[in-house]
Amino acid sequence: MKWKTKMMSLDMVFLVNIEHKLEKMALQGWMLHEVRNYSMIFRECEPQSLHFNILINPDNSKEKTSVGPVGELETLCVEDGWDFLLRRGMFVIFTNNHEEPIEIHTDPLIKIEMVTKQIRRYLKREIIVLLVFIPIMIVFFASLKEKYVYSSMWVYSIICSILLLAELFFNNIPILIWWSKNRRKTQNPLFSLSDAIYSGSSIAFLTFRALSMTVLMFRSILQPIPGLNIDFLYIPLILISPMFLIMLWKRESENKPKITNEVFGLICLVILVLGFQAIGGVTLFTGDIFSGKQAIRTSDLTNIATPYYPLDNYTEIGLFAMKTVDASDSFEQDTLRTIIVRFYSNSKAESYWNNRKKNVLASETIDKTWGVKGFYFNERKGILLRKGNEIIEISSFMDMSNPDVMQRVKARLGLTK
Amino acid sequence: MARQQLQTLSEPMYYILLSLVEPRHGYAIMTFIRENTQGRVQVGAGTLYALLSRFENEKLIDFIKSEDNKKIYQLSKDGKEVLLKEYERIQTLVGDGQRILGEKP
Image (tube, rainbow over all chains, first blue to last red):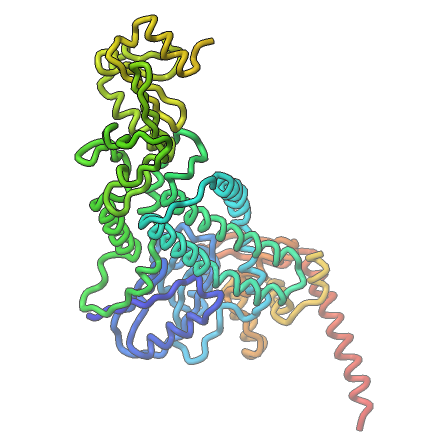
């Protein structure tokens, strides 16, 4: 038996006469078998003349396992000669092989009223979505602080953002067009308001998805919450359906398609992200660039003793790595060697700090004795301090725990009261 | 506001209320209407469902019982009043029509 996949979404029922398309497919010998998020699966059959009717019935949208009509309305449809075909969420598809069947909705005004009333039941949830995501969007824009330096990663980020914004827009075209067409048909102001809220919440939700992915791309400079490691946001990145990959996928095959659109998209996205990971690009989950073969060492950071020299050449790993160190400085004075490194983000600083701290015993911390966050290293001949994005390393041939040395270094750092 | 909308009934509304002078379930209502109008008035399942919900909210019909998963309704006292008013209104229209059209040769 042959199968065919067509790119069609039931959400388009507000915009496109999908019933007519299904009837045409049936005439050509393709019967609707399954409905997925963005596609429909057809199986080969004898060409037949069938009428299709798509009923919107959110009351039974959770009846995912039902193979027949549920509830009074659907039972009435079956009693009136319509055959239950399948259900997908709030959409129920019926067929009828009579030449001129009585439509399920014989009064278009009542149909619009009924559908609107049904959709309005979901308004409370949609309003909450709006109220939650709008502040998140405000925080996002407020956190944009620095400009980018052009890099391959930047280009990749821009491309992803454009794709996401396009997905956002595409998903909402049917809703927006239906709203603009239908709002003029009724005098009831609440009709337009409910549609606006419904559309707005869909836009807000998809915008959030777009923003969370954009935050990941630009995370080296976005720090809405200092110290927060936002690597976990990669999870929504991987789970988001990449519509544009699916849109190009349409095939006939001898076998029924075994993987869903979402799984297909997921596989593509995982390959994409893992590919970048393999060439030293974006880090995933717990991996960071300060461990393993590509670990950055202090000597990599400060090869030139020039104040605030941007060290792109020494800190990028691979072609697509994000910037690590914004600036650094190194100087020697009074037998003390000082290295100051300003990292591009809190997460980078945190990563480097944690790596240096790995072998430090509790007794080696200087929090209590020096009054700052830090620890000794190299048999107490050096100390490492942290101030936000900056890490300061001071080393000497003397024991830094010695009170005189401690006093001198404290004075230099402005730590004396 | 909604009640005011039902002061003048459309044909499907009128016949649905008429069918519920006796207790009936959904499919029986559709059959009654088709038979009594010789197929002239067609009420789809979705339209019937929507109107029954509206009538029930407006207390024009009462839910009597459920039988074999089918809900049975009947006209309420308020429903009878609305139906009678509509019947009288239609009679007035017919009377006016007969009076005026009947005078013409």
